[in-house]
Length: 264
Image (cartoon, rainbow, N blue to C red; front, side, top):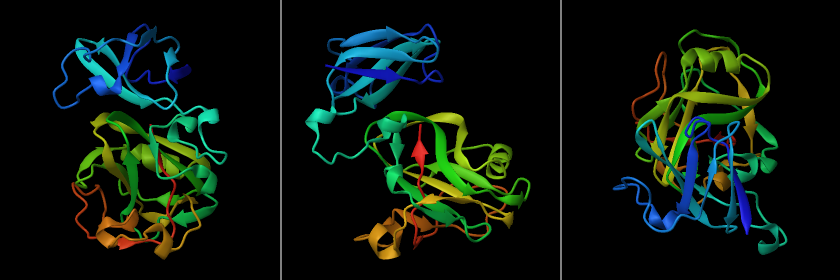
C-alpha cells in the first residue's frame, strides 16, 4: 500500500478532517456532499499537511471535507511505486509537489525570453483530473529590468482560451525583477478546473524582458503534428498593455523553445 501527503492548506485549513474516496465515486458536475461509496481513509490537516495511508500506488482519489459550510473537493493521483514502473520511468508533477506541468523540468536545459513587448506567450498544460489551481510556477534564468508599472501580466486560461485567473500585476513585476530561480505567483483567486488542457499566458513591457527555463527544442519538434491554432507553445495576442485579454483571440504563432511551467 502507498502513502500520500497532501499539502494544500489554502484548500483545507489546519484542523480540517479530510476524507478520501475513490476517484470513480466523485462526479464534479453534479456532486453534492461526500462522494458516494466507501471512504478509503481520512486524516487531519496539521501544519499545512495531511498524510493518507493505505492507498494504492498509481490510483486516483478525491479528498473531501466541508469547509466553512461549503463542500470542498480535490482530486489527486498517488505516484506509482518505482517497482511497478519500467526501468526508465518518467517523473510526474506530484514528484515536485505540483498538480500539472508542461514537461519534466529535468529536460529544461535551455532558456526562452518573453520576446516582443506586449506579446502574449502561451504555454499549454495538460490537466488529467479535475482540481483546484492556486499558483503558477516558472523558473527565471535572467530577471527583467525596468518593467513598466501596470503593464505586465501572467494569467491562466481554460481549454476554450478564456481567462479564468490571474496573478496581481504588481506581484508579477516584483517577482520578474527579483531574484532568479523559481518564481511562484499566486492567482488572485484560486480556481476549480476540470480535466483537459489549460493555458498559461504571460507578457511583459519594459526595458528588459525576463528569461525563463525552457526545453532546447526546435519549432518542428515541440509542435509536431499540430497546426498553429493547436500548438502547445505559441505567441498569441499582441499590443497588450494594462490587462490580459479576456480570451486568447489570436490564432497563434508557434515558438521555437517551450517554456517550462507548473501549476499547484
